[in-house]
Image (cartoon, rainbow, N blue to C red; front, side):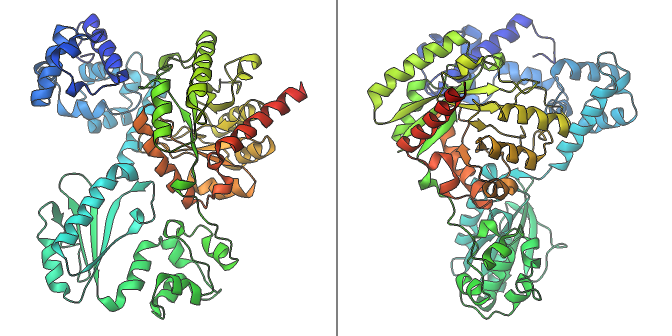
Length: 554
């Protein structure tokens, strides 16, 4: 609507209705016409649109707008940093109707010459276009999981007599998946292979395939598929070889032979025996990355990894007090229903006005509600938290007396993301040194496949957290998974605890906790080094002790 200069009041009515509906507690597709009409902001035209969406998955106004919008413009709308107004200017003045044309115009310097754009904007557009192009064919682990498990079920149905294993990056729980790999084991491989080829949901690329592998692409989405075949005799070494990362296979076991060479000996009858006969502690599949795990295994230092069951509570969550979909009570009751002992509520702070950040008066009101709910829901407990914005100079956006009213504080950057490594690191360290910072939230601000994080000196940040007794968040939202698993071991070695936080903005967001656990496990995280593996009494004491130390220093 903005792209086609629709009436601003009409646009605003849609935006307001969307906000109201998103924050509602009910599925709008299940509501009657009378119930929908009773919702604030849902007028006659909005009601008609919803009713048509229910029946046809679309509605006339949307179809009219799409009909007069070049298909390529919809791709351009996905480029970060370009809103409808700027896209309309590019369309009108340069005739740009695709990302390809946009890149060509930027490289020719045409975009910089348009009023309101300039060299800096042009360079940012180029960077974002390159970032988008580099992520083609890549999928978040969480998003692609259902598809891969569906493929697994289909392959099993086609090859009932064979053994089937998921291998490759997905088996190691990598955060980004570029290829779905399977291993099929059997002695009648010609028949098995023929059955697999019959799958019409995959376009097989016979030129890239071979006697022991079929390669292709899913027709529905841009995902590469590889199906490996082997006999029963080769099952174990093939599975171990195809599951491990190339760097793991190249790692030397005894100073002379690599993991790959040891595997080829086939002198073992199980995964456990392979590690045992090579004088290595068993290495879980998700850690087989060539990231120092062989040395740890030689010294028997692979820890007992964190599991979902170890987590006793959920910290960093949002309610309708800021930009959450569900009320504080709903978030708490569902958390308890899932079997957790406590909830850490941490709505946005006042600087995040765009997300309904809390004013000081709203904080008082929320704290009163938390105290009332805690009396009602005991022994379950809600801890008073806030996700306090880290300002441009590294300060938090409340005065000390307000910060002191919380049980814990998640300090995060949400604005001015175009920083160099020196500024970003300095800004974070200043926030870490604030005595009220309990947890450093999503340290790089990245959104996987959407936005690169700002560059930081991870060692300096982790060292600062160690010096100031600050926990680092592993933000479990599949788009973030930040802190990256590659820095988990360094954090643990410095004595820095981590917290698996879903950053949930609705009750269903709690389900993301499992992705944070996967990331932690890849980095070697244990329950002992996980903040929210503490039970309610332990974490209550942890928060109280921190606050008492702050008060004693005043």
